Amino acid sequence: MIRHRLDAPSYQLACDLAGAGLLRRLPAAETVLRVLTVGVWDNYTAGVYLAADRDNRIRYVGSAIRSGSDPVSDRIGEHMRCGRADEWTRLMLVPLRADLSVDRVRRIEGAIGRVLRPMDNHRLPTLSGRP
Image 1 (cartoon, helix red, strand yellow):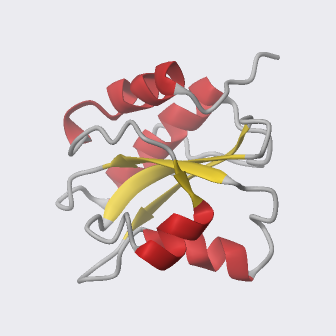
Image 2 (image 1 turned 135 degrees about the vertical axis):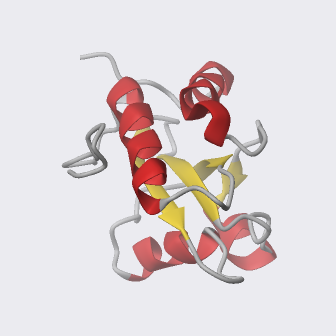
């Protein structure tokens, strides 16, 4: 089974899979620390995030859609607090339009996850948006 690395081609592929839901491309990876403490993603309330370990292997693909001013980075913090993200060192975000439905965001997450094949996802949303 081929697994992708967190690199420019994988990120571009993820953005392409987001289609018209893509807000913009942010091709630079960030450290978990910068996402959580510096607030580099605080302007985004919807997106699909790609998490990699120190060997740059994609460990997890997830999504977040937040109402109001809660940023996507809050979801990363939730992962960190419960210990699910202990091996994550680098992250990339596919920012999505804030007006997308939860179902649409989940379908984009599933499409990206099925192609990038993250190591730690147990289930991914299907095209219908359900796991």
